Image 1: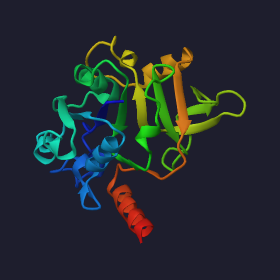
Image 2: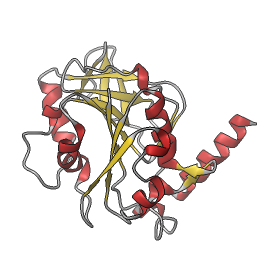
Image 3: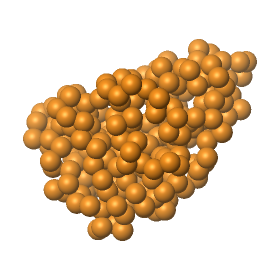
Image 4: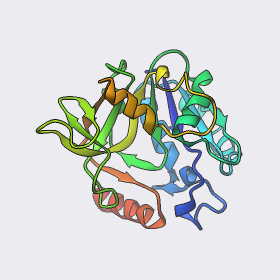
Length: 228
């Protein structure tokens, strides 16, 4: 994968007041903006073109990150306007910047030690999702995983119900025929599951959602203790 999309267009409402004047992806963790950790991991996985979708306080992203030359990559921005387009709409709008090949997508508001280089460059279906164990705030999970395939509900016997870790590899076709505008990606996942074209894998390493001030504090404390 040479292209990646970092989802950074959220309004950061649950992170207020920290996001009143700073977009959530630009909040610092260990001395650098959260989104920079993703950029560095993408560079390590040989990604050379990164698209960042923006909305809330969008002008701050190029001010902080520039064109990517600092990391040896090219960064382009997909501005969605004052109201974010949701994941599906945001991905659709960014397609002209992403090229024809499958691309990696990661949400800016997570932290993980996933090695992006280990993800498939060519998904077997329309997308390949990284799943994680169900966190306390999402105990019922999203999809069931069995033998590399994702299912709705409980899935077949022996399947494990897991939570989408907000990292995945996508083919353009998952959204390219949709009408431009604001829409969620969930219906596309559901159609892909029905067609047997949504694969996945379970990641069992360190992963955290960073959606609230408490979660941000917990991440910082956890990383401090791990490094100590």
